[in-house]
Length: 302
Image (cartoon, rainbow, N blue to C red; front, side, top):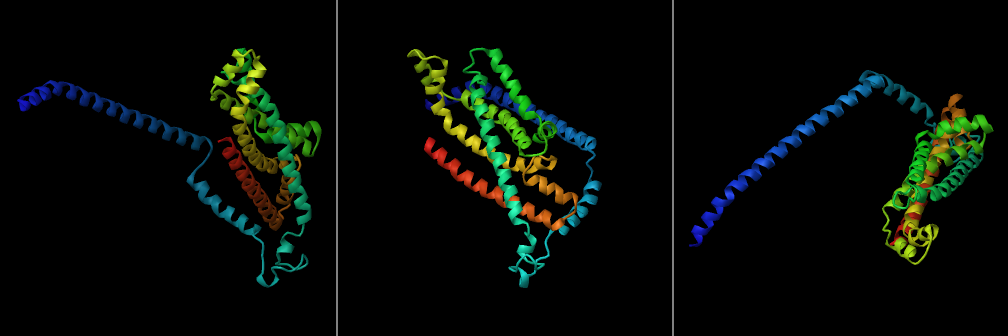
């Protein structure tokens, strides 16, 4: 009895299974064709971009040895027997870093540029992010306009802003601070707005139902939820801005970058490597400190 029932059910399901397998095979074939098509387009785009950019294996093969020669010239000629001697002894660490006091001050200036620019940009981005968030927008056209402004701020490279501000305000840290701050407004404004858009608005709706206005609803219903993420992104941006502050000095915007450009232009090879090592150590220390601080904020937010 049961065998007959099972046979009848299998017979009834056979057409459905056949249709399912046929449809599955069709979808798999479509996916394979799409993968081949888009993969081919990607490879073609890469080849075209390589051609336009004049990238070729021959140029790479010719340039790598020259890069190695330049890098070899920057390596200091340290000697173990003189390693810990004073600055007047060639082959010592002190001789390599003979201008450490001046470079340390320039690194401090670079860190100050990055810190002040990050703080200024973060404050402006903080205010604009709530107006740019679509879920809080009372005037969609205003939110769209602010988003376009943020796009413009982060699209232009920092070094281009630095060139403009150096021309306007002269050589010095002010140009670097303004350049990095403007770029930070665009970068953090976008991130902050996206954090706000991903926020649960239940608490905000409760404040509105209790009679609160827009500012109060954001202050008490949204800000407590987004504050840890805001701080985390701002700290991450500070790490990025330290690197940026080291580069924009090439155009006279202050900091260690200006000194690095000077020694590169004069082919002081060992000084180049000394400054690069100091920049790497500084950025690494800031990264370690920022990472610990960011982890503490995340754990506090939880």
